[in-house]
Length: 68
Image (tube, rainbow, N blue to C red; front, top):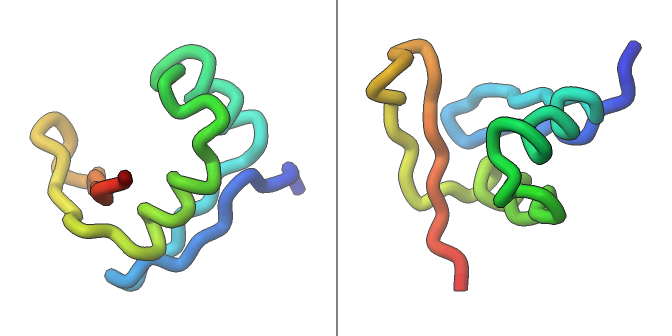
């Protein structure tokens, strides 16, 4: 089994799992602004302020949290 960067139960309840290799791809190719933000991503998934359906993919949920 691949090592996990994330394995989080969300309040919906859904389980979000991300391998270290997937996280590396996310932070280097698709969302480089998330590099070094794993703890904030985990917090957002556990305690989101808002969850929306993706406008591009109705099977995908987008989690938001106001940080600051």
